Amino acid sequence: MSELPDNPISATVDFAREGVQHGFLKLPYSRDDSAWGAVMIPVTVIQRGEGRTALLTGGNHGDEYEGPVALSKLAQSLSAKDVSGRLIIVPFMNTPAFHAGRRTSPIDKGNLNRSFPGKPDGTVTEKIADYFTRTLLPLADIVLDIHSGGRTLDFLPFAACHVLPDKQQQAQCEAGMRAFNAPYSMRMLELDAGAMYDTAAERQGKVFVTTELGGGGSSTARSVAIAERGVRNLLVHAGILDGEVQLAPSIMLDMPDGDCFIASEHDGLLEMCRDLGDNVEQGEVIARVYDATRSGAASVEYRAARSGLLAARHFPGLVRCGDTIAVIADVLN
Ligand SMILES: [Zn+2]
Image (cartoon, rainbow, N blue to C red; front, side):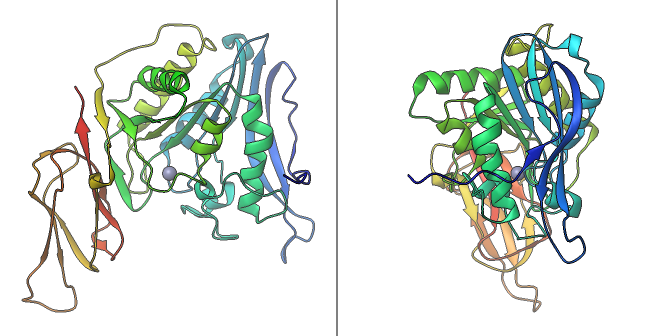
């Protein structure tokens, strides 16, 4: 592989320095309204002594809020004496998307979580991805990326890990997922994993945990509490914070194959016939889609291809052909 150019992002923090630092990842972005301007991505580094490094991110998609809220609170509340090792906290990973309240960047339409490993001389979004791939991920032992459904999906609150070729690494990721201890824990199948942050972290051998903690383009008191508790639990599990991992019952879920996904083949008005957390039987009607251009036409029925738990759903009341209507997961315990 040819040598890649340096990434143009510079950090205003020193990742090797002890103590608490709040600063920015500064990405030059020359544009019409700011000739020598920059995208300023907030970052907090907290370090004390030797130990492991956790890289914590929210706002990878800009319309998901549990991670940004929980990580903003963590960055503001921790002092160096609370930490053994190092925390790198980036609450608004795709900062332009976050400020726009959108999944993707308004600058280049980039979906950060489909832009890895990134390019140092690519778009703004690809430059952010490259900086994580080549600068931040190599510093980390444990990587937590907090997601939820955004404006178009809603999820049962779960922490997740993936099936990995390295079974020892998979076991460490699963242990991290269990320590996060969301009400549900998912062995997650990705339909399009190649360019995800998850995959970049896992390929570097990191202990990687992700989440889906709700959705609909906002957060709730309950979903934020799950995020805060999960982050602390994971950091205690990693030996970076003192204390005990607080474990409550968590229902184990699995997505064994593509049958879990129900996709719409019609545009129209969505009627969900089952809600998140409901047990559904194979063949049962999960949703109906109505032609919204006329009255009196028969609706189209969408049925469960498998039995299980309704773990995700399309959030808006209107649906388009190709949208995911629902995800049905297997219950393992
Ligand atoms: Zn997301």
